[in-house]
Each structure stands twice: as C-alpha cells, then as structure tokens.
Image 1 (cartoon, rainbow, N blue to C red):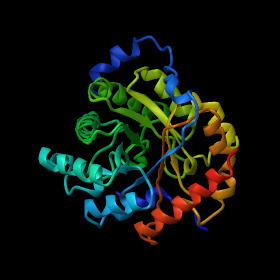
Image 2: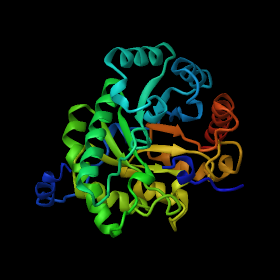
Image 3: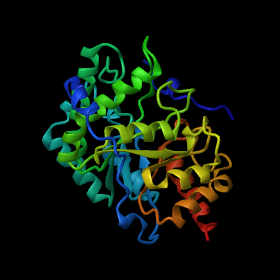
Length: 318
C-alpha cells in the first residue's frame, strides 16, 4: 500500500519571551502524575473528526459514539471558514452539549495551524508571521479550553518547515513560540503536545528525542509531547522499545496503520501488540486517538473497523 503523506493532505514569540526563556533553568520535564502508573484500568479510545468533516457536528459525534469511542479529537480547520473566532460562545456551548449527549469527552485539538486561516507559520524567519501564528495559537487555546479539551497536538508540518533557515534556528523559533503561549495554556488547563513527524512530512522535529529536547528546553508543565505510530519512520528502535524509552513523557497516543489508513487495513492488529502491551504494563490509562489520512471508506466504516481492530489488539494483551 502507498504511504500517505501529510503534505498531500494539507496543501498550502511574542519573541520578547525569548530572553527570559533562554535564561531559565533547563532542568527537564516533570514525570507524569502517579495516577498514570497506578495500575491499568483500560485505554480510553477517541477518534479524530476530519474524516467526517462534511457531516454536521451532531452526526460526527453520533458516528464516533456509536462505534464505541469515548472521546473526540477535533481538527479546527474542519469547522471554520476563516478561524475559530467565528465559533462564538453559544456555538461552543452547543458543541459541548452535543458531545455530552453522546457520552463523549473532548480530548482536544490537532492540526492546529492547518488553514484556514491562511498564512500561518510557526518557525519562519519572518517575525510578523510568527507573532500572527502565536496569536492564533492563543485563540485555539481558548477554543480548546471552552470545549473542556485537555490536549492540543502540535503537528502541522507545513507550518513548521524550515523556510530559508537552518533546522536548529527553526527549532529555536519553535521553542520560543511554545514558551510564549505556555502560561496562557496553563491558565486554561490545556497542555500543548509536540508531535514528532516523519522527514517525509517536515524537516523540523522528526524524532521523539528531538521533541523531548524542545519540551525540556521550554521547561513548562503546559508543554509536553506524544507518540504517533505513523510518525516513527525515521526511528531506529522497534515501536515497543520507543514506547518504553519515552513512556514517562508520553501524554497522548495517535494510532493508525503505518501507511496512514484506518486500523484493520494492514498488519497493525499483529504488529502493534507489543507496543500496546508496553503501554498496558506501565499503566497507561490515557487517550488513544484514531487519526487516519485516507477518508475514502467514510467515517462510519473507518470508526467501526478501527474499533474492531483495537479490540482485537487488546484481546491479545496479557
């Protein structure tokens, strides 16, 4: 099967904090709360909504809930024409009510800077564009907080690529931008999770260790990282070893077949067992979100067949 590319899917610091940030004590991130390792009580399965973006929000939630998921992860660009500011307070309340009525929790947001709005870029050398992107990220923090979401997954490959600068300079801009929004995120009880992406998608932060290095550099509890099966193409260790090595810093998991299709289309039911076992052994009781990049089967089929595969994986765990 052809490996799908996120570039094909989405075409297109407040820098005054940088001095303060550079002078801060770089002591690394805190360990996860003990509740995460208090004993495995079961994975919490969620589904990302973009495979159903043409359907009304209520129908999206019903499909996700009927398939057995307990959470929904939202790509903001699927809901707006210009930006999240157009979703007013009443509409946000209605979105929460719809989720509640279906027995769903809002996991949070992903595809944060994918257009609309256009013209955002987080690591560009153009200060004006970076500041605009930081401002929009703050808007997304409020949107996530208003929906009672917990996590914002920062992937957005096209909005973090190098643009005529070195990778190291782009990473510095990335860290500075995250530091600029960290306090606001903390106030809204939202955590921004840096997503490692394969080099076929972006040239900035391709490895889990690179993501962790930036998290440690920012050194704020509102900034963390996550694990995505699909994005491990540049790693040299097996999936289960990666889970074990980075477990203490994994706040969230994305899952799909390795080519980006929905679970059940490939070998995930067998190949992911060791990784899920490693998560279970460490007492991972957090979200596992289904995120796919081939929408052609339709949201209902994607939801149902992937849930069946997740249950098959779980049945193989000791």
